[in-house]
Length: 207
Image (cartoon, rainbow, N blue to C red; front, side, top):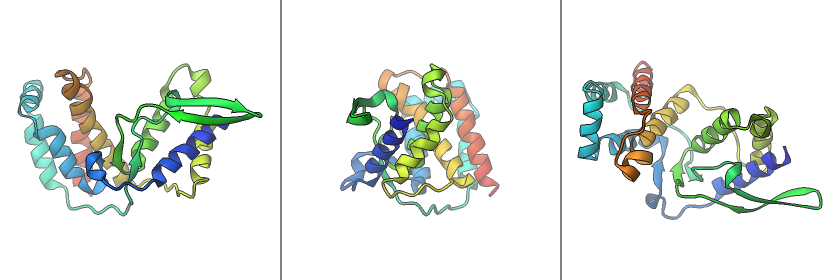
């Protein structure tokens, strides 16, 4: 559990760092969700053809739902996001009975936006990653946030709207960037991601 707390402190420090040129990082600003979704799903003609071949109803539904969502304003300060924050990307040593993090790996998914993106990744890994005897202790998440708060960063429970926007953006990014941009193929879970995007937009349109 000590490692989880130190890990949380490290993520908090990253979130406190000042970003001078955020335009060079992947955009995860919740207030720019429309721009992010359009860039991910509409900017590549070949990608659009593949999605349309997979589902000829997706883009018409997307257009209708995007148009039906009212303007949203999220009061949240964007932060530097690690993007792949978890225990497997840490260098760790123990000194005098205390755990110390001596290095960090894998910032290729770094971004600038809501801290919820890192939180969702971290909580998700603690809940599902195996082996469970290493990652599955319920106290780990609590200890993570204890360490995070130790940096002076507040942790506020996200509203439903916050969480819906995070899920829409995450699914749009997963559809496009992790597989299509790297390998030119669609992920096997693309139909699930597309459905989740439409479900999220439908929920927003009712607010």
